[in-house]
Figure (cartoon, rainbow, N blue to C red):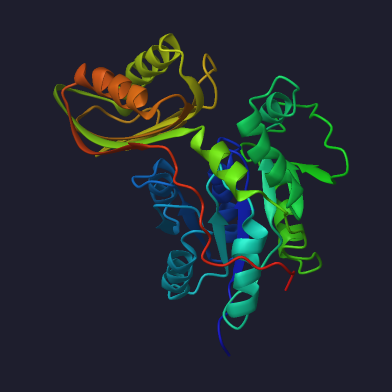
Length: 349
C-alpha cells in the first residue's frame, strides 16, 4: 500500500507564530507515535525558522527564493524528499506576506498529487495584536491588503498566543478558534479538526489583483544574513544575542524603520538562543538553551522584514555587526519580486 502523508498548509502574516505552532503540533503528534515533518518557505535563503525546526530534531526542508506559488516545482520536490522519511504529517508553512495560496498551491496539489498526498484544510494563524493593527482604519494599506486577503481564503482561522491575549478582535463572517503554542492549549484540538478529513480543503478562491498584490509585497524589505562571531573571551549565546539584539532593534527604530519581524538565532557548541519581535519597542520573545555554557565561536542568523528601503536595513545591520568580532558569510537584502505563480486554478478541485 502506498504511503500517503497528510500535508497541513499553514499561512498567516509575518510573526503570527506559525513555526512555533508547527513545533508544538509536532510534539503532540510524536506523543501519539506519529512522524511529523515540515517545509519552511521564504523569499530569501538562510532561514531562522528552518534552523530552529532542525534544532528540535524535526525532519525539515525548505523552499526559498519565492513563495510556494512561484516555486511550486520546488515545493513538490521538497515534499518528495521528505516523503522518503515516511512522515505521517508534513506541515507546509507559507511566506508571511503571501496570499492566493488556495488557487496557486492547494488546488494544484489536489489535482496532480492526490495519489501521493492528502491535503488538509488551509489554516491561517492570526496574532490578535497584529490583527487589531491591520484591521484599523489607520493601518498601512499595503500590509492590510495582504492580511485581509489571507483571512479571505482561509479554510480555518485560529488566533495564536491565547495565553497572552484573552480577548481577540472580532473577525466578522469567520469562524475563529484560539490556541497557545506556548502552553499547548488548543493545539491538539486544532490538529484533530485539521486532520479529521471532514472539512473542505482550499474551499475559497480569491479574485485578486496581481499588480496590487505585487505593490503590497514590495512595500516590505527583506534581509537574511549569516555571520560567524569569534570571541577571545567565550560567552553564552544569551550574552551574545541579548546586547546585539537590543542594539540592532534600537538602531532600526532610530532610523525610522518600521519593524514587521526581526529574528536572530545564535547557534554554538553549547546550545542555541532565538530572539524575536514583530514591532518596534516590543518586548523580546526568547527561547532556547538559556543556561548554555560560554563558547568562543557563534553562528548568527538574522532575518528582518521591515517597511523601509533595503539599503537602510543592510547598512544598519553591517554597522551593528561591526561592533562584534564577526564575519558576514552571506547577506541578502531586497524587495520581493512580483509574484508569478507556476499554476493558478480558477476552480476548487
